[in-house]
Structures are given as structure tokens and as C-alpha cells.
Length: 165
Image (cartoon, rainbow, N blue to C red; front, side, top):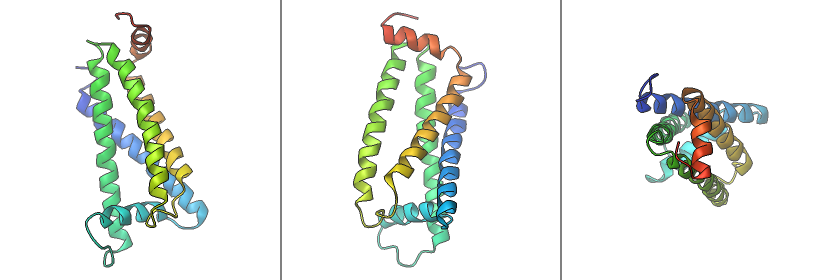
């Protein structure tokens, strides 16, 4: 366990950071466009549509529902990243795998976002806006976890070189 806390605490904090960064980005984009909360309302509507028609729900319910889902999803990502980073102390090669997984996730994420943008429910959402939000969140979460684990640089260098730490 990390001297500063457990992987669960780190995961929660990293997830909240990522979710907050994305929410702030979307709020800025929506305010500039003159439509506050447009993006979370649209994504909430799409999320609720998985459970059936969304004709009676309010925009506030869509925004709130999406926000809860969004924070929980980012906390899950934070848990996985923190657990893998903490486990890499015993197996440094895990960091190389985490780096590869991160790159693969980014590529898949952008592909799925482009496909979803073709959907009538999400057609008004710009893929680049989601992409920028995703990169800002990944950077912010990574920066937090890096600050919690300053040994990561050396461990990652060893892992990528195929050497033992």
C-alpha cells in the first residue's frame, strides 16, 4: 500500500478529478455556444434511451443521471489505473502494459465516439469536443497519480527497457 493512502482512495480522487475536468470542459464549450448544459443533457438523454423512450423526463433528470453515471465511470477508471500502478511495484512490466492499454483505449474511444456521433441522438455532439475532454481528463488523472507515485518515471523506463526495477 502506498504510504500516502490506498489504491481505492487514489482511484476515487483520480476519478473525481477526471470527471470534474470533463464537466468543466463541457460547461465551457456549452457556455461559449450559448447553450449551458447542452452536452450533459444530450448524453443523459442518450443514456436514458437505453432503458426505453425518453419522452417524459426533464432535462434536469438527464443532466443529473448522466452526471452520476459519468462520475462513477471515471471512478472505475481511476480504480483500475491506481490498482495497476500500485501493483507495478512488484511487477514493473505492468506499467508498459498499462501504457499500451491506455493508447489502445484512446484509439478505441475515438472510433466509438465517431460512430456514436452518427447516431441521431448524439449527432449534435462534436467528436472533437469529446476527444479534447478525454485528453484533458487523462492528463489530469495521470498527473495526479504521477504526483502520488514519483517513482513511476524510473519504473516505466525499466519496464519499457525490459529490465527489472
